[in-house]
Image (cartoon, rainbow, N blue to C red):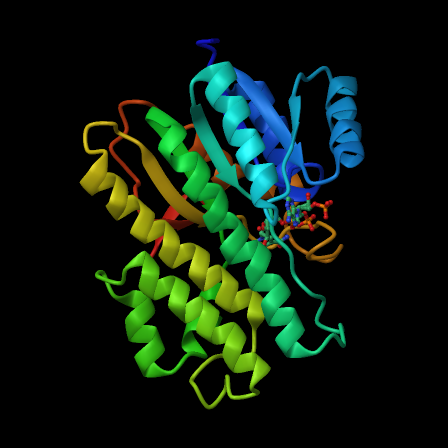
Length: 276
Ligand code: NAP
């Protein structure tokens, strides 16, 4: 088993994830895994980095597929005995103009952004080594999405005592409510992406509390962040930040020094803790 530190970035064949891997290849003292759901796209991305003189390793990972997540888990366990850095970056967003029925958009978006990310955490968090770092990529849209929620939902999402089960039930209810066309009546905003990222942000807070309770002394730091508005296939060419600039906050959180005792359980933007 290798003692080499290891970092894993989900959804990193392009966009912000690719830029995170590029930065980690330059700054992380260990093996950096570029992961992609499509092996061909992943290997092409690794080759692109190689042309830049950077060495990333590749492992397949589709966060919608439990078998794929478990295959990565078993690989990391066997080869490294765990992992040191996990960046949950993979995500999807329907374009504003997309005419796919909202209920379908809700189901598909929540499946990847919330449930897929959560499944990666369920399988990989127990493997994160002491002094490890976990970064969940959320978005600035959580602020407007939260404002679009009923007072009752806002209170639940902002509560310090919400449990993971309660959060999962709420995310499931959102999808079900869209299918019955009652989501607005039930206090939800008209953004599946926004709700999915509220889920990721609240989940991060819950996971950080869980680490405080169950793994106190392991000094693992877990946060969510917004990369900013970034020129990628998701956000388009008019966004203000380059992918490398979008990677800055996630990379900052992934590389927090081992003597740092925070941030932990926070949501950051531009390397700064946000209230939301
Ligand atoms: P992107 O260019 O569309 O890249 C998304 C990446 O996620 C791609 O590599 C994609 O793989 C991967 N992915 C999607 N579903 C996956 C799955 N089931 N399993 C594994 N990988 C999957 O988007 P981006 O702008 O870089 O976004 C990266 C993250 O930042 C997302 O979480 C996004 O919500 C967040 N974000 C972006 C912005 C922005 O302005 N761009 C702002 C706030 C937050 P494929 O190539 O196979 O599709």
